[in-house]
Length: 397
Ligand code: SF4
Image 1: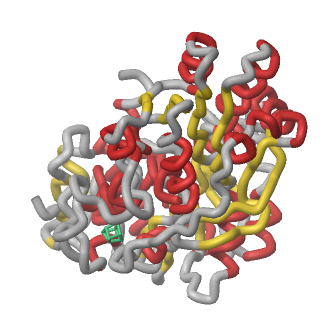
Image 2: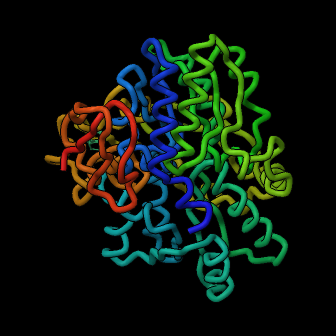
């Protein structure tokens, strides 16, 4: 498949790995802030291929995982109302709230529907003028533009029974919060390519300069990620800390002006709570005053909910890169994708789910062997075949 297979080439992966090995002289900790990149790293065993000096820390990049529990509880309360048709992408249905999830609400008679686009929810609103249709709008700068466009369309078409439950978050303030944390070990960031394809890279140079941390815009295929790591390590070894775009086939410096204009029209920046982290200033969006009557939180009285996090779940530490999923006592025992305690085990982009899916059931996999090794894992599509280098990698199958 064009633009996919050529970015999974094992020979080129081996060359990038050899370059990283030749460059690195001391330990470095890099963080990706994107669940898609986390999934790709674990799926392809990229973290196990790297020299031991390079550690990858999985940041709060999964949109489902960072949605705060109180917002899940608000969604559950709204979805249970008899006049409501509650629409959501499918991955939110199993995210546990304090006492239940959206599947349970549906089982108890709530009208909860899985849609593939917010425009599907708008169509349902048009078809059901006697009902209130709510779409659960979560995620980063990538999902916010289509949700903004749907609210804009609803207003333009005079569809008054549609509203948006908004839980959108922004990546740059999260990087700021991570760097300000007293426990921060991060020395370089792989910035999420799809976020930058929407927003551009304007917000990052100031962050990179102030925190003296390289930020490399990175894609999602194995070669993209290895190239992002290679460029970050090279900067660190040289003492540099600038923004570098390693994903130019998708990211222009200015981003997508039409999407940014739609965001600016429909949303305004606000403080947002991140699950497991807490409130980060200016880290999210809410509907601007012109669209406030389409805000589900204003339309339904759900602000007095007190959430109750399961005591066993340590997803907050996982989301901040302070704990590997397999180091959580509940991982793979009481907490599995079938019985998730936390959102990081539910979402396909969650670090706990990725570790479980790709059989990272304990600490780092063994890395040993002769000069030319094979890279393999349980997932189809892994970087497979001969990879020149100095290590052989085996994943826990
Ligand atoms: S393994 Fe389960 S309980 Fe542990 S941090 Fe992940 S989601 Fe929470």
